[in-house]
Length: 147
Ligand code: ZN
Image 1 (spheres, rainbow, N blue to C red):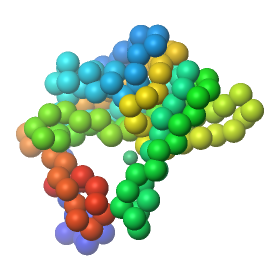
Image 2: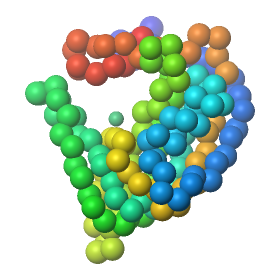
Image 3: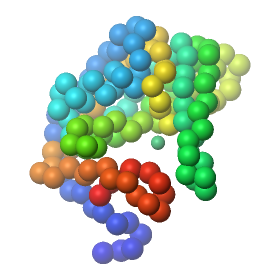
Image 4: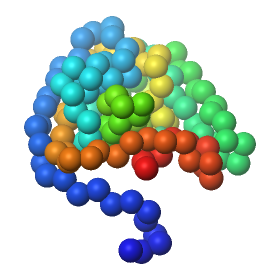
């Protein structure tokens, strides 16, 4: 095995699910409910839409701590990308957002609770795999990464 990657997971295409999000819901909460309700344990997520406000994270790698960026304005979701894997034996969403404001400025970051949905369309592509990856604490990065 190459030392350029430390894990490889092989599965097959599973269910392909699509959802329209409810106006006013919390984006992170909605994505998390989607994977829990449908018991997706491993897969990819992509979503589009718009938010009324946003809360994003930036990980300061050297300090190993999160900065929080709060944007109290309506923005387009240009791109929402994420994945689902297991954390503490439950499906767990990790997602990033690229947002556009009314002045044409782009903001982005790690999706945190606190993004209020105006409209949202979500696709979930499940990967069927016997043993999905589990997130465990990684001392090198300070993050919970796939074991
Ligand atoms: Zn992230």
